[in-house]
Amino acid sequence: MAPASIPNDIYQFSLRTAYTAGLRDGGPPVAFLTNHGTHGIGFFESDEEDDNNEAERPNDMIQVDSVAYTLDKDGTAIRAAREDQMPFTMVCVFQPTQRVKPPTSTSSAKVKEVFERAGKNTPMPFRITGLFKYLNTQQQTFWDVKGTIFGFWVPGWQKEVSGEGLQSCFLSDTKKAGGRVVDFETGEGAVLEWAKCGRFHLGFPQDEEFEVLRI
Image 1 (cartoon, rainbow, N blue to C red):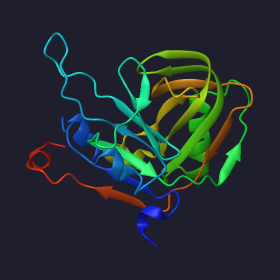
Image 2 (image 1 turned 30 degrees about the vertical axis):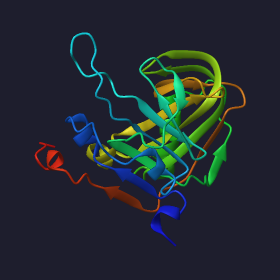
Image 3 (image 1 turned 60 degrees about the vertical axis):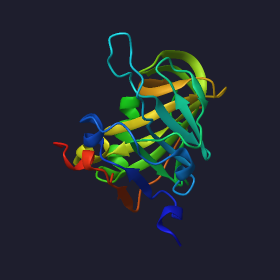
Image 4 (image 1 turned 135 degrees about the vertical axis):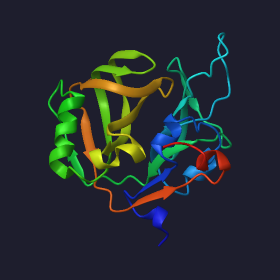
């Protein structure tokens, strides 16, 4: 069995520190994702500039049920093109092993506590579906919205590689809006699912730009 097909194994391309240091172009295309996972998050490359000639914030990516979506700077979601490239991404074949219905108004901090108890040192893919009373993203804030949060719980030791804590994106039920999640409170009937990652696969950029970064 190919490593990419094993449920809940995480495939990541590039390092989070490389992305924050400026390596924000290239990377695998959307068509590559289906070989490595059904669910994921990431960043698309962007070479657009604003009126001050500064690089625009790259669009976020969320993959749900093997379909990838672009989440732009305003929170608009559209289906991503197969050739769109991602300089940083994390994906997995998501098959949850744990499922709970958290109390209404469960916060992102409470969800983080659940994962710290379930596996403090193990990365875990997770999904929350249903109603959210409040959901703040880097793009916009939602109230009483239905949709899906998908992402990864990343333990502290993995911070330089993948970020830290809850790394996730949101896609509305309409699949027309979303964003990179900052904070949330669940609504009535929301469902939280997760699983422990058994293996972590890391792909490295092969260009010279990666080798000269100070990370």
